[in-house]
Image (cartoon, rainbow, N blue to C red; front, top):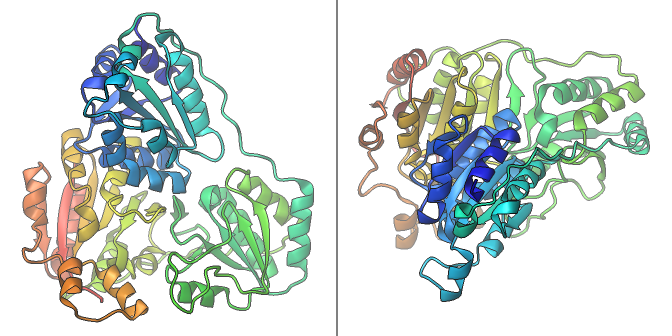
Amino acid sequence: MNGAHAVARTLLASGVEVCFANPGTSELHFVAALDDEPELRAVPCLFEGVATGAADGYGRMTGRPAATLLHLGPGLGNGLANLHNARRAATPVVNLVGDHATFHKQYDAPLESDIDAMARTVSGWVRRCDAAATAGSDVAEAVAAATGAPGRVATVILPADVSWSDGGRPAPPVAAQPPAVVPERTVASVTAALRTREPAAILLGGPATREPALRAAARIAATTGARLLCETFPARLERGTGLPAVERLGYLAEGAMAQLDGVRHLVLAGTRAPVSFFAHPGLRGPLAPDDCLIHTLATAADDAATALGHLADMLAVDRPAVLQAAGRPVLPTGALTAETAAAAVGALLPEGAIVVDEANTSGLWLTAATAGGPRHDWLTLTGGAIGQGLPLAVGAAVACTDRPVLCLEADGSAMYTVSALWTQAREGLDVTTVIFANHSYAVLTMEAQRLGTPADGPARRDLLDLSRPALDFVALARGMGVPASRVTTAEDLTAQLRKAFTEPGPHLIEAVVPALF
């Protein structure tokens, strides 16, 4: 058995069932190994950033890592932005990065690069395989590293001769590090802070945005009067009718500071103290008030749900959690805007949907419009590196074949990884994509206004405008095998959403909306 076969069998034995792949010459022995291991599903991606983003979506929905197969340093480099997002989401991902044969590296061939250094920028664990005999054990440890709390990106660098050489041995699974138990004294300290009845807020993130933790936190908030918040960009937020309603921290620093204004105690569960996304003249970086006391109940590596339950017990909470009531917007009519588009989505959102939100400025009304809809998951742009939405939807759809996926995508962001549509068509994935086509990088126009830069210079017009020519997403989608339509009224959007939600396979709707900024 060669090293590549040992790697494939070890992945399967360790619970890895999917490989999002864009291979090159150095990875062809592993491709051959996949032919002999049909249970390890190979999903082709035309760009490495799609493969890494899809692995992120898969991991968020299953809690288990998918593998990626990337070609040397340039292939890893193409996937870095979405690995950055996966790192911020604490998603388990296992990267297999092919490299030149060990004896060939001395020649500095054209594709030679420092893969190890590149991998460390986004990985919590990196290892270079030295021999076919140890490749299996290296991969088993990588899977354990990826799935240990908190989840992380684990990268295995696999030289070509390690893959093709005999002597490979599959390795048994390695136990992953479970979430840490929060000490009693920590829970007692937070209990004391909340018992003061001074103004308080609970900020949830990471695993604390799932149902068990949400319910415990909501009970605590109802009893103590603490405000219940979650991260601006949660990796996976469970929401909808019957679940606790959680307010997301604002993206703009001014808004987030207003939400936290007057808070004396900020309790963190599964997240860190919030800071502004960017520096702005006259604004401070930390978002909590200067006199706010910050209490870390649980980090992302801790068992936040159990800690919140323990906190509720110590506080002897006596009020039920405030749950989201059912309620949908009325189907909109007339002009199509970001607001009427959100109403259409909220009115028609299917039961059990997985919503991937990279709508950016066009998504300002989506949260409110969907809050009272049927239960669903909401996946967001955790690391801020745009081009995540379409690949994330691929991974979520591969992970959850029995659930509809709705990808709400800004036009500028979509172009980063538009080839994900081809993978959706190739795999027959049940993804409905709505492209909000405002023909601009509107978020940058907004930020320029906040920074006070010149309002209408030629460089700004050229660099933030996405017309001249206007992008044609209908043609782009159809060219990759995805049925597509363009809508300009609320009624048209409603009709196309109904059609997409009732027909199998991928669909794209280009929703032409005005820019907000």
